[in-house]
Length: 388
Image 1 (cartoon, helix red, strand yellow):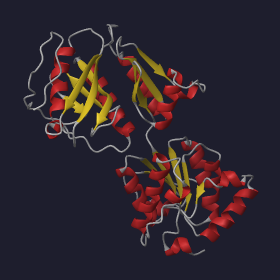
Image 2 (image 1 turned 90 degrees about the vertical axis):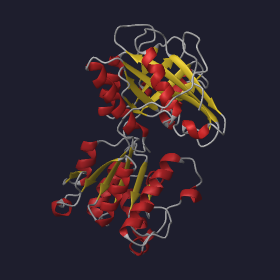
Image 3 (image 1 turned 180 degrees about the vertical axis):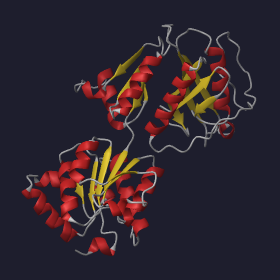
Image 4 (image 1 turned 30 degrees about the vertical axis):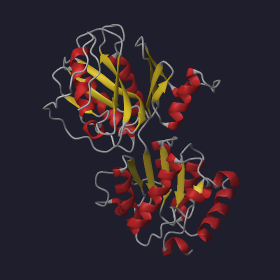
């Protein structure tokens, strides 16, 4: 067993005996914003129901850690919890510390867990490492170091509007400031504003000096134009990756009964995309092979901050598409944003495999934006993509 962190009264060396607890299992989160939204809502609901609530955040990690910096666990005063900061004995120790911490009005409590390779399995680590966890009390009374619930409500409101937020917490004093990354001008390196911008853009929470920066970005979203067979597989994969999926097709018969659980809009693509709004957390893929549907969607996407734009079709189709978009006023550099033929070259032969190749390329574009073109080069993945 691992040794728990010292308590405020100086006691140390306590062994982490397993707790008997029940909690809904957390699904794997490839998009942390989906987990963040659920945890904030749960924390506020417990607080509004009159429970004492603590929020535990992974501030930093060294070595092996299954949960990255920014992962969170919300604990209430009867030991119910949701979320994860690691696994095994780390959760047990954090929940125990939270029970002592919740009744007190004090600055954040920083817990450090270090384990050897032999102890790693007991605490959910693949091998030896260190996890640093910060406890904050959710309370509106203005106590030293308390996290004001109104700040979390504002974060929720901004997420519903697809606007990013970042909470900067001074680890020693507990002072918390809510930043709007969209309102921060470029700043000098190594300053807090620069760190806030970098964290929001890279979607990475973590420690910056004496501050813990927690990023709250809008949920990733995939908009698919064309309710074709590939689209059915693509939205299913996107949802498993925790994307919000939207299908757009003015042909209502293509949508009817084929996309249960997905937002489906039977509107012309340009009008639908204007209504939805395209931001830097949105990917757009056109699949219809019909210029009257694809071109208006691509026209709208090229005028947006969408992080990925893809279009199904052969290289010859893409060349003709470039000519048409040029007539619409787009430059060659702008049109280069379109991945066409769409998808990574994995030798896909059927609709499900085509969808997989598309989602792989979207992921590579999101996670490796500076990778050499050869590493994430688009491909003609099917016979449909290889021919005009």
